[in-house]
Length: 269
Image (cartoon, rainbow, N blue to C red; front, side, top):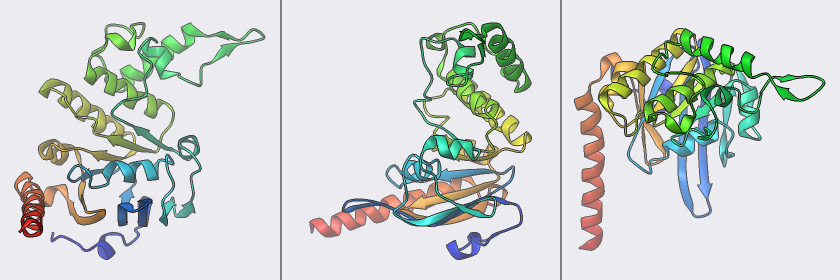
C-alpha cells in the first residue's frame, strides 16, 4: 500500500469513531498545528509518531478537551463535537493518559482506581473501601495485570511500568471508548515495555480505540494497526503497520533531520 495524501486517508468510513478535520492550533505567533486531519476506527490502535516539537502532544490535548483548537473540527461517532474541558471529553468516552499519569502517590492502587468517583456509605459519607478494593482487584485481574503484590500498596511504591498499567486500567474502568496514550513506553525497560504493549492489546480486545504516541518504531509496529507521521504541524504519512517497516519510518525522520540541518546551514552562510 502506498503512502496516501491527507485528503485520501481522511475520507470517512462507516467504521470511524473519531475524525479530526483540518485542526490548527496557534499560541500567539507560534503555530503548533497547521492543518491536521486524521481518523480513528472502532477498535483500532493508531500510532502517532514524529520528532519532538512536531505537535503530537498538542494534538492529543486538543482531542481530549484540554485546550481548544484555533480552527478545524472534531467528529465523534459521526457528529461534530466541541469539548469545554477534559471532564467534558471524558463524559463523551475520550480519556487520556499522560506521561505524568495523574496518579496520587500517597494513595493506594484501589483508591487511585476510584479517584473522584469513590462509592460512599450513606447517610454518613464514609468510603466503601471493601467494595473499592474488591472491584479494583477484579478489574485488574480481568485485564491480566498481575504484577502487583496487592491493591492495598501505595502507588509511590510501584515501578514506572506498574504505574502506567494502573493509569490505563483506570481509564478502561471508567468506560472509555477512546484512549489517548502520550508516550506510555517512555523510559521503560524491555520487560515493562512488553507489559504495557500487552495491556494495549487487552484494551483493543475490548473494542476500545487507541491513539498511542511513541518513539520506538519497533514497539509501534508491534502493537499498532496503522501509523501516522506528524511533521511540521501536519500529518504527512499514513500507512497500515503491516505495509511499512522500522527502516522506512526511521528514514523519513532522518530525512527530516537532514533537511533541517541543510536549512540551518543555508541560513548561516
